[in-house]
Amino acid sequence: MESNKVVSFKSLSENVGRFDLKNKTFLVPQMNRIGTHLLAATFMGFGIDAVVMETYKGLDLGMEYTSGKECYPCQITTGDILYFMKKEKERLGHSFNPEDYIYFMPESDGPCRFGMYNKYQRIVLDSFPELSRVKIGSLTTKDGYSLDGIIEKERVRDLRKVAYFSVVVADILDRLLWRIRPYERETGMTDDFIEESMHVLEGSFKTYGTNKKFDKILDKLEEIVEEGKTIIDFTIPPKPLIGIVGEIYLRTQVHANQDVIRVLERYGAEVVNASIAEWVNYTTYDKLRDARIGFRLNLKQLRFGPMRDHLKKILGFGGELLYQESKQKKVYKRVRSLIDLAEDHKVAHLENILKEEDLFCFDAGTEACLSIPGIVEYARQGYNGVVNVYPFTCMPSTVTSAIVKPLMNKLRIPYLDTPYDSSFQPGREAAIRTFMYQAHQHLKRNGRKNLSGHR
Image (cartoon, rainbow, N blue to C red; front, top):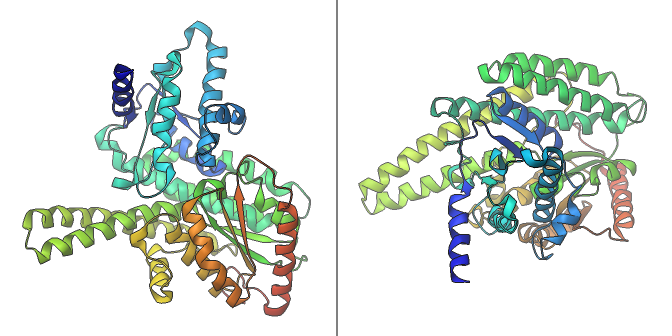
């Protein structure tokens, strides 16, 4: 028993981390469909064999090898990797070699179970002798999701820039979907169009990403936006505008959240979901914030060595954040000149909201830092309702709910919590219908904003 424990700990240190992806199949779980596919296409453009795994088909396996106390996304992603490996063994037979694969499961620090997914999944994979040699590639928020070690050193910076750009473009394509679908001329046109557009952009990232020909990709995105506008029936009056916040996986994984955006649309909503880029920006901003705090503390104590270290981090993370925000601003500016889309939140602005309202503090960390001020910003911008989407028992989202419910009641803005696990709650549909009735009433009383920021 003792030796087995030693082996397990050794596996956690040796088989979870950063690994060179050369000549490996890089397995990417599907969180946000568009974002995951464009990210995989970016990796492919850099010569990495990236594969987006099918999702939700292995949920029974995920539930079998978890206890139910884990976060719901852990069950889903555990099922995804076990299902994929099962199918690969069936497909390849004796040619199946587990060392050919690296499974991608990043992590975060702070009080969130996500930081333990890859450790737990390592234990699960190790329980199958034939899967114990499948490595888990992990990036972490501790260094702002650095890509060092997964590709040649001289290409890391370029890959990081293009990967971030793919996240922003994917956010735009998602927002185009939510902007058009409630007003489409024929049912189903928008879904087909966006799916086709995703594949077109995959090709663009494979072709132009490695050379950082961002304008070529944006030209294609502009063509997509112009074509998408032709699907809109402009005689349909504006609908209640609903903002979504919450845990990043649940609010973007349509199987996990039982396609909550489409359900809201069925009852007359136009929806804007918080972006993936917002989380990426937050991880960079948070590390910059930590470095500044560390620099000030060491300056008071005249500890010059640590001061230099923190100054180096300030310059590194500061430059990274400046790049992210400038690139994001450029993309949104081009697209918003063509169609009325919601802008993204600036993380520093969200922190200022928390300070102004004295609601929460970035020192506490987690996605509550984004969700709480995000809700306040939706309210200030004239949205007609807000939905908080999260895994059942998720601590950051439960904190968010406790803080914002009284605030939303005071502001008389409809608010709905939608926690999810693998079950279908019998009252869910009624709760959403009731919420949307309130949102329609709010629209009648207060009108709604255009996404350009004008009422």
